[in-house]
Length: 105
Image (cartoon, rainbow, N blue to C red; front, side, top):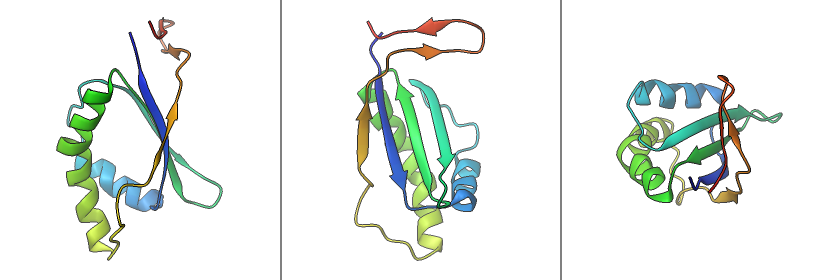
């Protein structure tokens, strides 16, 4: 299996992330293996996402994530010029709590 992974620093705080996560709820995002939202020392938020494919990533961003993000930003008067840049990441292994692991093929 190949992976599509990236990190991203986003201009939100933990409270805003919580609102976005609540809007997404339990909506399925096919192809998502793991999404980590991390609070940095300066209280900003960073993401680490690992997907089965680039196509599944962008489909879920368009259908699920962006519709949840935009209202939260707009309610606070935040109008970013575009998506913050993503930094590609190379996945060596995804290890799961049940002891199984997947490596890129």
